[in-house]
Image 1 (cartoon, rainbow, N blue to C red):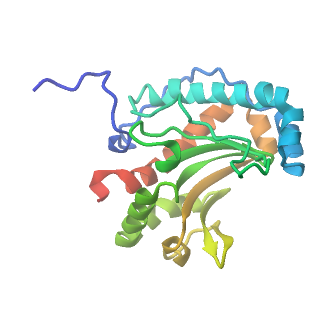
Image 2: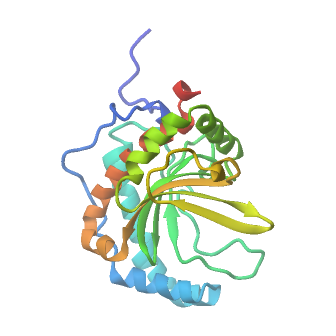
Length: 254
């Protein structure tokens, strides 16, 4: 049998962290986020409605969506392609500002993106997410209720190897601005539990969660200061959560 062609895409969970390549010098088109985008998101947070969205429409394109596409392109050029990762990087990788709330006209104050495996959909896969909000920028890993089977699989693997999971999560929680978050429902209300320091056991909230985040937060001022180098930071953060991504999905952890 011939060797695998060098251009063949790799199912992402098969790619180990040790095998991951990162260019020494990044090729960037993203210029950084602007004060204008955060001012706009502030206004959408204050007035989270389609009427405000319509007022902001030119800025939504110029200050939010177009720069975010360039950021996405930089991740593709500097991470996905060099590592031959079999991700969908074009179709439906971005969330929407307008809410699907049965005509109520609600609007979100943040936008996020995630690549996903082409045999599934973005919300139905384990996601390495990148989010801009009035608070700044965040990168992390998420598995949620739309990915029913994968959420159940992640919980099963955590329950079956809790010490392994803690060994992956705790080194991140030892560092500044990392959080393990679980969210669910109780009595018809949404619940969220945050852990910002290392934990000595898997929280009870994991078992009943309909979503599990491990996420790093970059404050608004630091995000602005980073400019184009936010791409560099994001690639570091993607590699930080990659072992958790593989724990949730790779066959060797089954």
